[in-house]
Image 1 (spheres, one colour):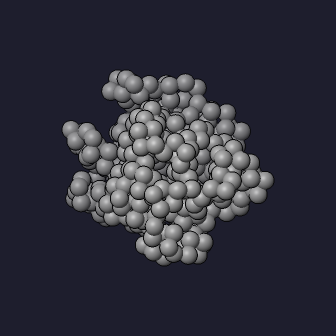
Image 2 (image 1 turned 60 degrees about the vertical axis):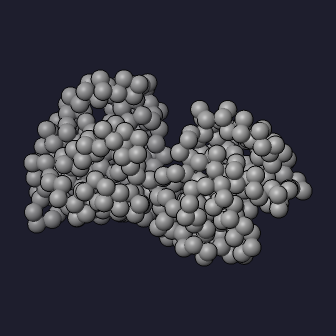
Image 3 (image 1 turned 135 degrees about the vertical axis):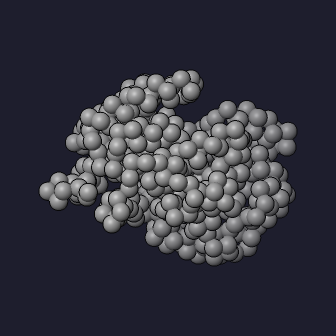
Length: 394
């Protein structure tokens, strides 16, 4: 039965491996303003998460389940009964999982607790398929115990239907969202400070990448592209903004190619400075081998920066090649360099503006928030309510 009209819908969110999640905080802030949804949170984390303070300050319950991803199998088994126990106490209308480590035990626990609607967001486009194929059956198991899966991009939805053979009727598409006001404005003083910090005066064009230094983010492809591009653009600068285990390898590649003057390792950039960081770029480079959504290039598009991207995640949904950005069809230095040259020969500011219009329309946080709430109510008010039994895969 639908939630009684005299009380708001109760949605319990589960999240693992992070102690603070910006978009869940935005959910809570919006729910507090609107008063139409009651939220609660279960956080699986190795130490006391920041959400334990953030959410109660906004008026919502938050509970911590100790979880160490380094002992994954044991941790997931230990978390399962605690998830069930909290769900039995809270009796939410909806349980919503967000990452594999919380959705696997979370959907099973919600099924055992006979929760009316079990839903999860799929935020990877084939990690198990690409790197641990022996665990693909667990992705299918999660889908079996859930009533609905939400793909965060068309790329994810395609992977789920074509590779994992999940019934497309069971999948909804709701893009991730970010508050546009955070990225559509840049501060001139901060931009000047960042230019000076990174030694960009008199240099250009400037391209940037904000990502962890891990193999599938494609930094080595960008270095190879830079090798090609500096031959025609000797003052070009490439900002590598991030940290991670592959940084030493990438630094060595840069040194061997003699690109120390052209590639700047910025280290950590304060989050509040990121919108202005976009403002000093002539283009944003995204070279990931696979990407479920891609928050950073959505942010760059909102900031009006033209994006050159590999064909992954939401870039495929938002970028019309040559109009609102550049899509390269091969994941290589040669293809990225060609994409940058196409951008430089086009009207970059106009392309950036076209991308900004699309990003604000598609990736506005309000669109995401309404999309989820509409989905909850649609499913709960359907003539045939979801049943306790695991759904079929099709």
